[in-house]
Amino acid sequence: MTLPPATDRRGLLRGLLAGSLLGASAPTRAADQTVSLPPLPDRRCIIDAGWALLHDGQGFTLQRDVSILIDGDRIAAVHSGPLRSMLPRVDARSHLVLPGFISGHTHVAGGTVTRGIFEGRRSYARALELAETLDDDSLDALTALNLAELLRSGCTTQLDMALSLRQMQSYVRIARRWGVRAYPSAMVPGIGRLFPIWQRESDEVLRQSVPDTLAEIEAAIGYARQINGADAGLIRPQMAMHASDTHTPETIAATLAAATELGNGLHLHLCQGAREVEAVQRLWQQRPVQWLDSLGVFAQRVFAAHMSSADPSVDAPLLRRSTFTYCTCPSAGGASGFTQPWPEMLAAGVNTNIGIDTHSNDYVENLKLAVLKGEARWSLLRRSSAAPMQRPSIQRAVEAATIDAARGLGREDIGRIAVGAKADLVSIDVSGLLAGTGALPPEPLYHLLYANGLMVRHVLIDGAFKLFDGVLRVDQEAKLLAAGGAVVRQIWAQLESEGFFK
Image 1 (cartoon, helix red, strand yellow):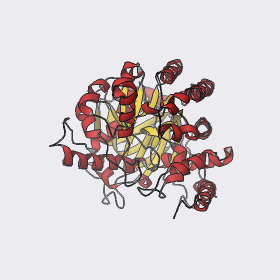
Image 2 (tube, one colour):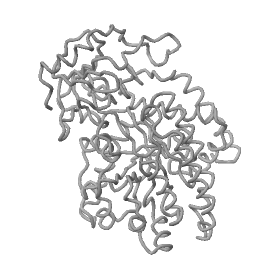
Image 3 (cartoon, one colour):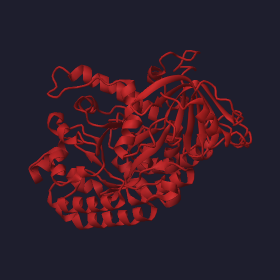
Image 4 (tube, one colour):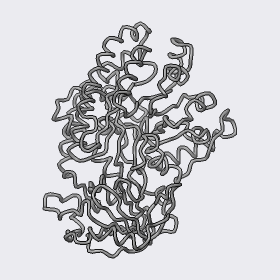
């Protein structure tokens, strides 16, 4: 990466060197957060990275021993070697520093409600329905615990398809409180109406659902107007369709009009399964991608998840455009979930992203699973597949999680470490136990294949630390666990009374 000349860097730093030296000593361990933590070097500090993944305007390059100067919400300088300054320093010399991860598909409030209680054995639907009946305080406790997990594992931006308008409002309340970069939306039809429409016996159910779906769309855009661009642009709401088989041309037109007004894009599930493909072909005589394209959906910026029943040879050419991003979600369906056509989409040149979906909020784990499941799919199917396949790599997964997602959002100021970019950063210990070897490795990206979210040490959004030395700084971890756990136990008790666990 080309760095500014030394004379330019000195001029850039003159106004910053007078800053007072804030305490940057390591805070107490996460389990003991009742004591006062030292102040953070927010928005005026230098991060000394063992390795950093930098962007030179053309692509990524790994560079060793880098100092990253944070000034306000931006990266002010990227310096090869130690940068002399009296500003606070953050020791990341045993870490790999990356751009903040972007999940193009989350249902934040649903994570801990469903985790570990279905896993290929039973449906998660009832747990999600019960979550929708919670009061606002309980719903916020659930949302906060799940969002804390996402932050803890380095996910600085979420495209959250909340399962209802109430859940979208809960997500926005917590995201605004903590200063999280968010593209929230309310799934339509919402979880309270979804399953009778989605799992219908007759298409007459879909036709009869149109007035209520239009009312949901109007409620969603009404709320989105109130928050669009809030908190200096951190909050940028989208519109969300559940999927092609739960909508009609009339409801899609209303969704597109609302998304055009907001200007932040559209979020949906696409080709989730054979049932969706069959329903759309029966009703509209086209496959989902062809039908949505004929309605003008892909003229929007679209993030679409799963595509397990896509036909890449037919669908991919229509999706190879700057406005479309495919989100593969390797933990969709839980730990025993299915593979998705990420290798085919990579080979076709479709823009891609790694999404969280619902059940696992560990972004590092999902990054790793995307590669491992993608390699398994490539290995098993590449000789018999009708569509070309590209073998995934951890390098490609990191690109999908950062710069590719930013491109899909039309953002040149996130998803990269470069002068002038937003200071959304994550540092991961690649030298310590389990993921490391006791020394800074020569090829740090490969160590992500042995890592998980607990190895994330620092997380910044807009230059503010949300995690510092492994300790959450947005709220107390123990308090979040206690409050969120109480809500989950309430849902479990109801499920048990209904015979769910038998």
